[in-house]
Image 1: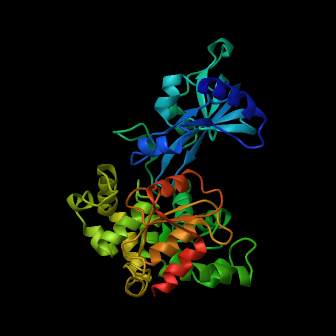
Image 2: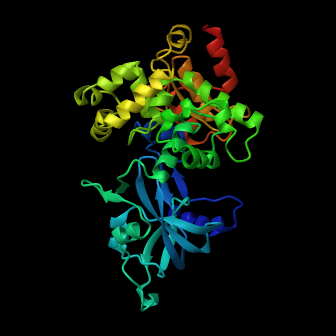
Image 3: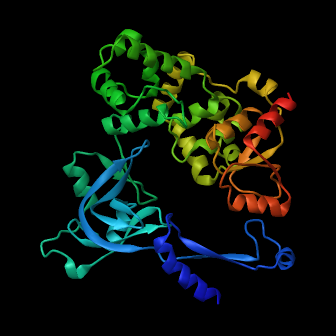
Length: 406
């Protein structure tokens, strides 16, 4: 009966006004649910069945390359647009050189595409019967050479990486990441402005941003007095950003936003982090061997050391702010999970609010969770919190909790 219901839902979901990717089967009796209980990650009285992803054939028109903030090169399939799971798909990730070789993907091939988890388009296979007779094996190295990109493959992986730090595309991606909202959050510093800064002023790394005057920005295309003043002010204001934002912004491979926060929490200053040995980094919760090695390699690079010295000389915040740690620790020792949608603040803003008050934000509900901050459409995290007795509060209740303990 359960299987028949799943098959019926698989047919019905094509007419829903929202996308779906599976069905959940539950024991319906509450007393039996209680007896079955839950593991740390999931209830024992429920199981999810994922529907087979919708697939479609289309033509692979080209293979283009995306360059990340660390110079990593990711191949992307440019597809003849095709309807898939309710949207038009024209691009799909190809992951790396090994993936292209394993599936023998060539430009001009007819490929089978699906959306992984109903979200990310991916190329599954090639229809060899429809392969053009004049097709050529895609050679990653030759393609890079044709684009005048100097790169080499990581010795321990499948990723190609730009070798020259002077490469303008690599510099552009690094500056975009540094200025982005999850990093230094520099307003008015978008892609078009960064491209001009590299072309006109030949800036090499983020530390060069702090050497400009307002008059320098007037040399940029379409910049008048007000826009130059706004950009200059945004860059100057970023000097006082939290230390974790700077750690995230400088672009250490494998170090994301949460890892940057963990590193600030452990070392309190850029100087202590810079001097930390591998053996100390590996002891930090959330920092694995690969990340610890990346951190050590990055800080040992003389160019990076020079950049950090310039950032320090320009007055950027290199330590955990003492006033914040002294005055805003009202939620110290409390663990929070945030779920759902909120009318006034985003989840990232709520996370910052909690962390500035000394609390810690996790992605999943567990026995260690003190509070679940729940908005509209809270979903499974709310269900789990209710089952294990976690306190559930709104964003307004969170505000009151912070203010009440000050």
